[in-house]
Length: 190
Image (tube, rainbow, N blue to C red; front, side):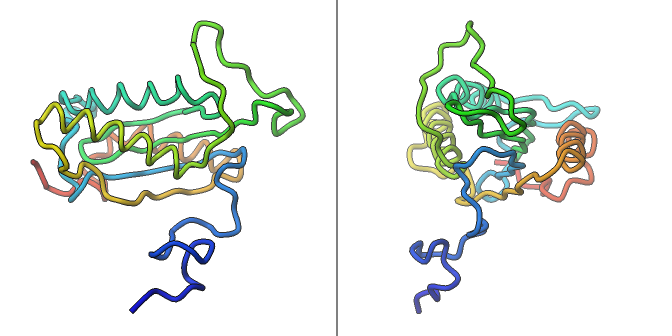
């Protein structure tokens, strides 16, 4: 039985969306995102003494994550952490063509970084592109073509004020230290 249209994002996608239908996810703003590995497998390394130690797959993810911001001028990552089976990050979409959110000019890309200027993309399209690039490299490394690396969806939270921003930033930075109590931990290893 098909899902009811009133539950589908913009009444057109085949599964109900976790996105806020009243929000434009391509608009300038700050977003807390989390996405997990398929079956929450521990692919990206391990935590030892409160420090994340990346595996070769974790290093691939780190490289692709950082490269993502070199090719997307409208996106800034304020903080992120790669954990054994998930990633947390605060992303900002900035408007490159108008004033910033507080009447200041939007920041220019640093001169030492070569960035391609594109119209702002949505958080969902960014995550999809990142996952595709990382999956391709991981599966080439493992020689496992077509094997899923990620869960199909991701969690987002629109950050509406500076207090929430600081709280989330602290949470992300402390995530390795709190790994033993992390709800995303699970016990699944590849």
